[in-house]
Length: 512
Ligand code: KIV
Ligand code: ZN
Image 1 (cartoon, rainbow, N blue to C red):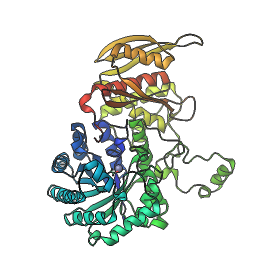
Image 2 (image 1 turned 90 degrees about the horizontal axis):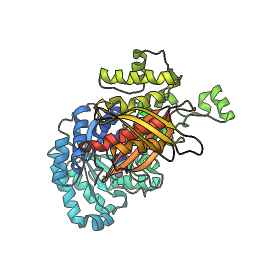
Image 3 (image 1 turned 60 degrees about the horizontal axis):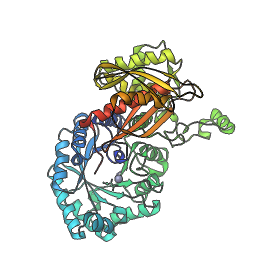
Image 4 (image 1 turned 90 degrees about the vertical axis):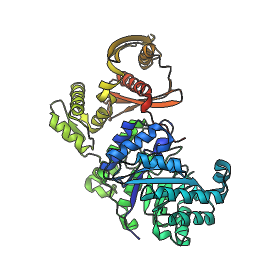
């Protein structure tokens, strides 16, 4: 059996199914580029048949990503599979991932199909997909809760039709590590042609065991592909987290004995990019990528780490992208130093114009903030105002007044379609007043479903990073903004969300 573990990232498909996490095509491409830098083997870019937006996003990723295989999900029918193949046409390496539910519950209640019908449809789907691409993956949805005898029949048939990867999803996060591992091992033992396919695990985190279950699927079951998402993003409690599963296999190579192609130094930048894009904040005590993951607060621990790092550290922070050198740049830093730092942080800006715009913002920030941390730089380049030139709304300036016992007031200037607009309002607080001032002119009618402020680095001198999630006519969009003044950051985030609401064609619908 191979000692190589394939990392299949589904942040852009299963991760995006998380309510409120939908991404634009450009956001998907940006994350896909970071996943390519991370050297993930397979990027599941979306579900091409689910909407025109998702089709275009898969197509954009397929046309631009060269080093990773690009995959599209497809239900087990000709239309979905044809759409997936069409979207993947430009890919250097393309995979179609087709699925159909096999548990009695799903077949009866959801699909209203008999097991024999499901069996036949799975077979036909894989045959059809194999006529379009050579790399086909099959998933029996709700596989872990399926009857093992029936599952064996279906899997044997789809391997005969040429499915090269068999993925066994724990769709509802019901599995227990040993049981899931044994389940996969027994399928592999019972299915006569099981050695003709690579086995894959896909675990949801409803009971908090997605990573443990995936690792058991690898160790006990012999799976050689793990499906996972950055930050464990995904519906309900999310998916298996890429950073945790990868670092577990790497740190405990003595136990797993497996190699991966992943360049772990890009993990942190990927985590921040996904968090900033979706507005799903990473909890401070999250393994590997949380702000406290490598912080030693107690005196005993600090003393130990200073004497010998391995007293309390099982991984090196630098290996996952944390910089030992926290204060990186300042007011006197030049464009080259800035560009170099972006490279080290894994950020690729596409044109000199984008670099110049980001550098101008860096200089502006350095005038107001004496120490510029990596976190500030990442926020700065993810701040959509870098590319606001083409956007409908762009922030210009803001003033606000608040005093104990008085109702706060704000006056804002922003551009709408290139024309400068001024608006004023009162509100419950300065943020509320500022957003009401914007809304008094824009009249979007959107409902705010999330407002969150996060301090990017430790002190009160920190930039505030604000996420605003707006909902309008069934569409949910996230806007982010960063600034040392959180009222300004809030206004920028609101304008960025309004820009996304405006660009209707650009939205990607989650899986239906
Ligand atoms: O969780 C699941 O079952 C899935 C399949 C579509 C692979 O995401
Ligand atoms: Zn899933």
